[in-house]
Amino acid sequence: MAQRILVTGGAGYIGSHTCVALRQAGYEPVIYDNFSNASRQVLKRLAAICGSAPEVIEGDVRDRAAIETALRSHDIRAVIHFAALKSASESIEMPLAYYDNNVHGTVQLLSAMRACNVASLVFSSSAAVYGDAERMPVREDSQRAAQSPYGRTKIICEDLLSDISRAEPGWSIARLRYFNPFGAHESGLIGEDTRGVPPNLGPYLTQVAAGQRVQLSVFGGDYDTRDGTGVRDFIHVVDLAEGHIAALRKLEGDAGLLTVNLGTGTGYTVLEMIAAFAKASGRPVPYVIAPRRKGDIAECYADVSRAREMLDWRARRGLAEMCADAWRWQIRNPEGYASDPHREKAML
Ligand SMILES: O=c1ccn([C@@H]2O[C@H](COP(=O)(O)OP(=O)(O)O[C@H]3O[C@H](CO)[C@H](O)[C@H](O)[C@H]3O)[C@@H](O)[C@H]2O)c(=O)[nH]1
Image (tube, rainbow, N blue to C red; front, side, top):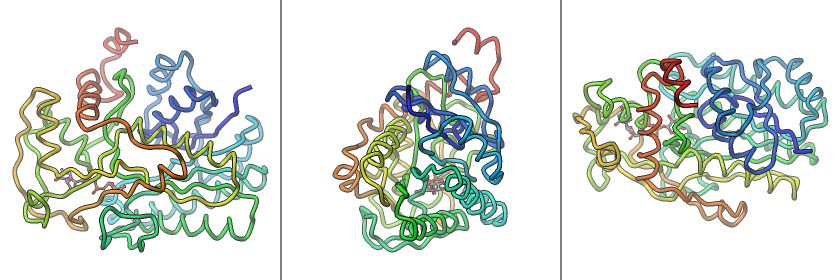
């Protein structure tokens, strides 16, 4: 029987793509999600892609008893822990919610896992832990210095995981530091469903190209980069999802603690992203250069050598594919998962 993997936050953007990758790799994902920032529609879409929907448990990661029940009743072997709040800017306004969901949630999850003898964990960390790193591409052993409460919750969880793995050697833990996910599954059935004003470049760009927003504000045109705008490592969400399978496989072999960047190793500027997206969509992307955004850094892209060596994984999809897939998702789902149900029926 396929090994069952509990995927907290499995109905979210990266989580849903990881459920597809898990099925393709012969695992059985069990989604654990409180749907606070995800749609139940994703389940139908996963069924259309995978042949059947994964099992779903509606629950909160801060509910230790509910996680224990989920782990025991589904004979779970490992956990991929996505469930968290993820907006750096929002975290500045509401730090307590971030510490509660991200740190307290992880403590509860780990306690439940220990009680149930489930000792294999893939943890969602972020390039946000690096802050304004001195050297690019940034290596895993760079100093961490987060710029936001969100980034600090990730550092605290990373430290918690290293302390636990030192104290209790039975654990197998991968801390994966994601760079900037973009794109969607090639089917156009699952993608990033942003509620309200998108805080990140990818969905904002997509909505401007679709005519849902008038123009993009480019935050800062005077950085010390090749065209003055910020540089980031945009990674196709399906590549990112596949990185989790590589990590899971690695954990099956060795106990211990791994920390790995999941990026492409290539940085693109905001203006390069705009040009690539305009090309992929065939639509103009009006923009204006605006003041720098508070807390932003000039550039951040990954050193990917450890991912290659330790996980035998690398990103395979390029910028054009990322943009084309994001655009397909957008035009098929102009309102995200809340799009017209008749239209949805026609798609499935
Ligand atoms: O409307 C926008 C949105 C973004 N940007 C620019 O686009 C780049 C990327 O910004 P994002 O908000 O998309 O992503 P960040 O790199 O700021 O942060 C994201 O990636 C980080 C990891 O690198 C963390 O995970 C963080 O939580 C997540 O929001 C930055 O130069 C930003 O200034 C714009 O110019 N206009």
